[in-house]
Length: 278
Image (cartoon, rainbow, N blue to C red):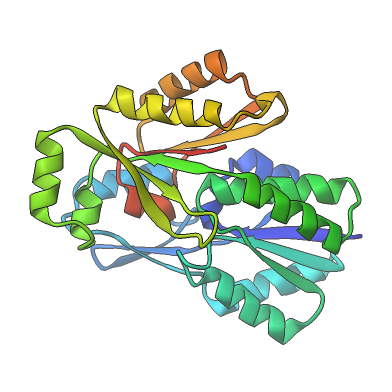
C-alpha cells in the first residue's frame, strides 16, 4: 500500500531519518518572551537552549494549527494513497486531537495513532511504522504491530534541575531549594497506561540516578541485540555520551539513536535532562 508516515516536531528524530523515509512533520510552536517561533524552522534546538538560558519565564509550547496539519495531509495525498499520522501523547498535547479532527474532515485516507509518549518515544514509533510500511504491511497490520511495540516501550527521564517545574508552578520554591541543597535528581517516567508523566524516584547525585536507569534497562530482561534504545539530551551532550558509553558496554543494544531534545519536551524537562526510551 502506498503510505506516507507523518508526525509532529516533538519526535526528535535526526534529519537523515526524516529524509530517508520522507516523513512529513507538522511543527509545533514555541513562545519565548512574547516571541513566537516555529519549531525546527524558525528556531533550532541549540538556539532554543541559548534563549532559555537568559529568559526568566518558562517558554510556552502550542500545537500545530489545524491548517498546517490539513495542508500537510492534503499535500501528502497528492502522491500517496494513505497517510498514517503518529503523534505526541494525547495527554501531553492537543496535537493528536487536532490531527484526528482533520482526519474526520478528510475521511478514510487518514489513520491516526497516539504514541502515549514524547521525544524519541514518539520518534522510535514513527521509525517502527516506517519499517513496517517498508515491509509492505497493510494499515491494520501496521497499527497492530505498532500498538504492541508502543506497549513494550519504557521511558525514564533524568532531570538535572527542577527549575522549569518551579517556573511552571508544578513545584514550590521551597521544594526546589531543598532538592538543590541535597543534590536530589528526580527521575520521571511516562505511564504506558495513560501517557502521563509521573515521578519514579528521587535520587541523590547524577551518577546514582543514571545508574538507576541502566539497572532498569537490565531488569527488563530482554535481548537488546535486536532492539533500538533512544536517547535525547537537553543541551548536555557530554552527559548523554557518557551514558551511552555505559549502555554499549553493559546492554549492547542493536542500535542507540541519539539526538538533542527539542523545545516541546525540553521546555518541561529543562536543560541537563537525559531522556531514555527502551
